[in-house]
Image 1 (spheres, rainbow over the protein chains, first blue to last red):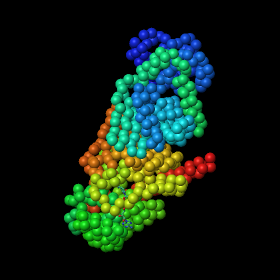
Image 2 (image 1 turned 30 degrees about the vertical axis):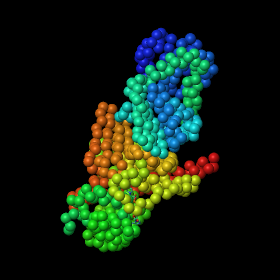
Image 3 (image 1 turned 180 degrees about the vertical axis):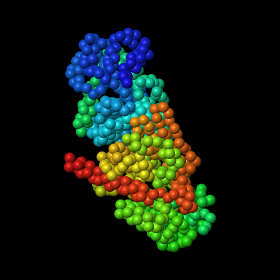
Image 4 (image 1 turned 180 degrees about the horizontal axis):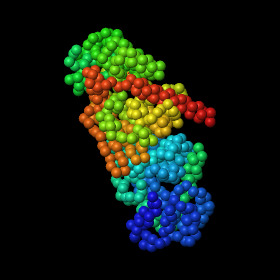
Length: 251
Length: 351
Ligand SMILES: NC(=O)c1ccc[n+]([C@@H]2O[C@H](COP(=O)([O-])OP(=O)(O)OC[C@H]3O[C@@H](n4cnc5c(N)ncnc54)[C@H](O)[C@@H]3O)[C@@H](O)[C@H]2O)c1
């Protein structure tokens, strides 16, 4: 399923932020997206949204003039819960031993893209993952183990089924509680659920009924408005995660 | 014959006190506790007195007691096999053995042989096997054992006393040891103990989803802090993830999941020790979800009721071959996980 039309529909829900939406180029991350982004930057786009990019080689793109804002609209990490979730995970990290990131996808999904999406998510929540080893893979999913820059072990897994909706679940167990996050796909406004449990009880963060695409577009708007020092910062981080994804496929 | 079935306990520690006595108190129409035996005579006497039973500190005294028809073995793991065998040879009506049934495949073979020879029914106290919320889903799961491809068991548990202390008032509890984690053999022993003591609860359930396990391969195994494990294994073409953590959390979470391309099963169990009703299972397809449970009783009650049915000749006993296979599967996992911990440690040490 191509998510790009959902992103385009989200643009229509920000009429005041983007009074002239024609300057915004929305690129489908499933195709040869680096070429399209390059074209958009060269033709003077006001801002670019790359929707769910698959791992591609785009080192040259990073050499271009960084004055245009480019935002990566990622399957899980673009959910508006991420800010609050990052705070919760980071607060618990010192006391947590291992991060579990489990994803449900439809059968036939592209595994390198699925792994990349998980790495982007863990980076957004906690810290970049610098090393990944695929432990097991079949037609139905995979299990991988990674290590964050902060030396936390991460279990990354994908299971393919149509029985339950696609979603990412991230859990960090601590010595006396847990932080748990469930993110549905960004194509609907179904909210993510963030629950923090500690000695005094469990707290569910307020739900936010906004699609990941809309949250990404708001981020694009902010970056455009601030006149970015480095409009390609998102892409640079993506590039690091793509390299780790590529490395993992070789293990 | 007595109108209720006479029960004798071998080992009267926390499990007997907090699990079985309260369960049998709910099933007084079926069972009467006649005899409590423990190597610690003070524990045997105290626990026996609570229920008006005879007490002793020897296996023979319990087996020689004609009032004991069913022997419940609740001693530490290492004594299970010899005690199961002795109870069968004593010609008792049935044996309930706490998990695990034994600690080696030699012991498993010996149990299978004695069971065949004496015909004494054996039930293993793996309560989730009997949980009505699980069994109802099994009855409706259709092709899931054939089509499932990914299985996961995750157990998050508060410290046992959190539940034991509301299930009863426990006498004579062993302190939890502090292991030396720098010693690889300690780590290997910890993961072995994690499988034999904790994962074991759900491994018969996992095995019921596998076409075979003779090709079992442990891909990775790690000991988790404060106490727990994470094991990734492959058998019969399916991935099996086993995860457990015991910490100071108040929030238990005991879940078994199995996924096929078009069906998912999720079973959430109630914690051990307490009587908090049955598990709740959900069988989901893209169109709908069916929920099984909660029932008002859990696997502890069901296992004893099944035992009563077996003793009264109303229910066929479990196939000992299946029980032995459950044990072999558990041992294979425990051994391979311990070996994986050793080899990871050695690889890291060499690097
Ligand atoms: N089904 C469950 O939910 C569940 C939960 C926890 C433990 N268990 C199992 O139950 C069994 C007992 O667990 P526990 O926590 O009570 O163990 P424990 O070691 O704390 O207590 C066992 C008792 O057996 C006595 N004992 C020791 N050696 C004996 C012998 N040779 N003969 C008779 N008695 C002997 C000890 O004095 C002690 O009182 C274990 O096998 C364990 O795996 C089951």
